[in-house]
Length: 219
Image 1 (tube, rainbow, N blue to C red):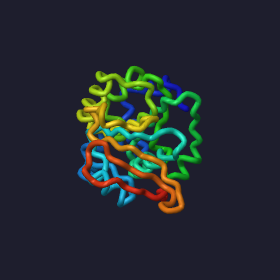
Image 2 (image 1 turned 90 degrees about the vertical axis):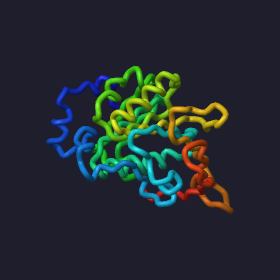
Image 3 (image 1 turned 45 degrees about the horizontal axis):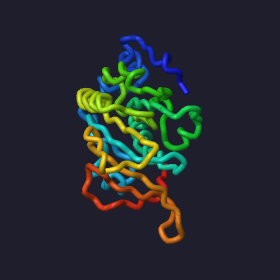
C-alpha cells in the first residue's frame, strides 16, 4: 500500500502528470471526448445500471468480502485507466496488501491508479476531494461514514465531476437508505449447477431494471 503521506504532492501536480500523458480531472473535463459516464465494458452490466456510472455522482455497492465481487468494480477501474484517467483506490481494510501484477492481469493500467490505506478516508484525504485530479474514486470498506461525510462526498463529486464508488463489506438495506448515493446495488455470489458461477445483482435504488445474473467478467 502507498502510505497516506505519499499523497502530499506539489500544487502543480496536474501539469507534471500531463507531461507524462496522464489525463487528470482538470484537463479531461475540457476535452470534447470526455465521457459523462464510466462503463464496465460488459454490455449487460452497463445496461443494468442504465448506461454506466454517471460523472458527478456517488454509487454504493453491497459487496461482502470473500465473494470476488470486487471484480465488478475493477471492470470500471480498468476501463478508466486504459482511457488514461487517473483513479484513486482508498482501502479501509486493515492488513490488505496490493499485488500489482494481479491488478494488471485484470485490465488495470497501473500507471493511472493510486492506492492508499485510510481508516478515516474523508478526514485523511479531504484535500483529494477538493481538487479535480482523480476522475474515479473507489472507497473500499470504509469503517463508518457519517451523514455529514456522505454529504461532503456527494457535494464534491458533483462539483468536481468525479464518480465515487463506495464498496461496503455488507449488503445494503432499503429500509435504512443512504440518500446521498444515486445508485445502490447489492452484489451476491452465485455458484450452483443450475445457474453457473458469477454474481446476482439487485438494485436497491437508481434503476428499475430486474435483477441481473452476471457471469464471470472477462477482464
